[in-house]
Length: 360
Image (cartoon, rainbow, N blue to C red; front, side, top):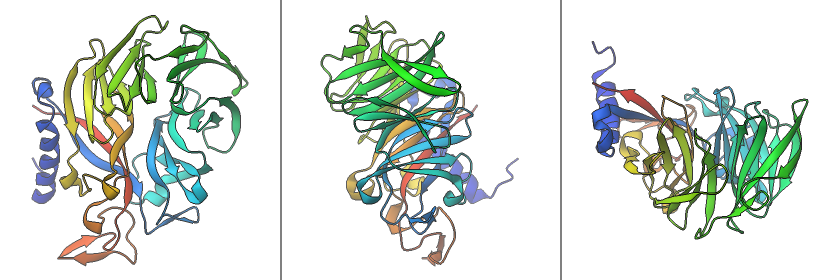
């Protein structure tokens, strides 16, 4: 029995069907995705006293909190030439100002990771900053050349941080020291060369992630490849993927955000075989496919096992200089008989949620 309005139901079907068209290999499994906008920058509102008409912009870094209740979002264009990191509550979509619970201004966060204790790791130009879960206090700093990839994982009793150095074309492995809930030190260790490993043939290393079997995956955006390195660093494999930026894992699937291609590639983790591409249903979501000045991209991505994923639409914006999202205010009005929350301004930097839906 359908309890929602016919118009809303048809829109749901259209959004879901759009996802199906671009993932034909999954049809036998009956997997589809319902796409929604989880969060965006509401240009007509201020967050903690800061107007959002100009910044923040370029949301690339993304991480899921240890408790699964929040996203950490990194923007590398903020006030006074600096960046910004936000902690955003998941599930609040009627008022994005209310969803923003913490703001840290300064770091150019092109990659973010969280450990199992809730600590937050931020790639900030020539360093990695380690903060508490509320982004209030720096615990530790790790120097690195140009870091655009960071991920933290447990390997037995060790807390290990992997980072990519874009300038040197390296993967680096740090064993972190913990004491009383703090990170107190780091040591380069493992891989092939004392904690460092040159990724031969790479051009522009971006984010890195660890899959369920302990393999390290790296996105090489300019090289159009995804690398997979064994835990000991002895085996390096790669697969062609256009403009990869980030990866997320759910069982035997790897979701790869594909930058300016604006699709999410789905790969099998064991074989690295490309299974298909998921395309965002831009029209149904009332978002501009190419984004602001044609610079829109899909960048940071995190998976919620069994429930799909979140992906950042870096440089994205709502369509046709309108927005159906955000808080109703003095800019809310009807245009050609349709109510818009912002009738005269677009909104920016959407965070998209692709919720896995099982269909007959």
